Amino acid sequence: MKNALVELVDALSEIEKENDEIGDTDVREQMYEAVHKSFISPEAGYQLPDEFGMFSPEGNQSVKKAIARFLSHPETKEAEKLLPTPQERLNAFQDLVETESGITQEDYFGYSETP
Image 1: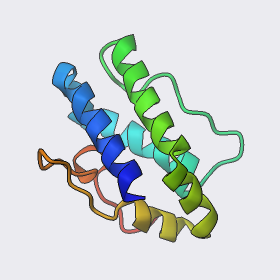
Image 2: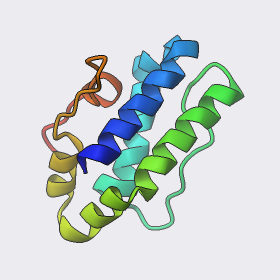
Image 3: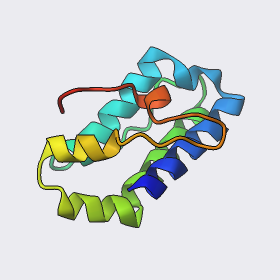
Image 4: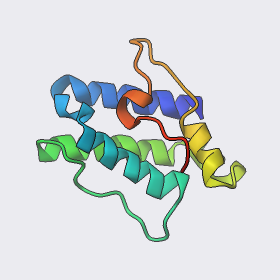
């Protein structure tokens, strides 16, 4: 799942170049909630929201697209099948990756001990 995570972090880093607010606590919490409800502990019928606390509709749409790409990535889909528990999926999501610029998924999603 590392490639999917690197692509997600890279996409969020690109968004941050034009939208500093992506690092705000509110945005980070909303992004984590979306990943949590759609991958870590999937909720039936859950759909990604249109708003993530970004300052512009374009910023919100960029975040939504980045998360949607992560969720549809073949590695993420495979992890959904191979990792039966929320704790295993959380561990896989938090398996630290670092981009060339030194950014990790913790920079955008924080860290949690339990799902």
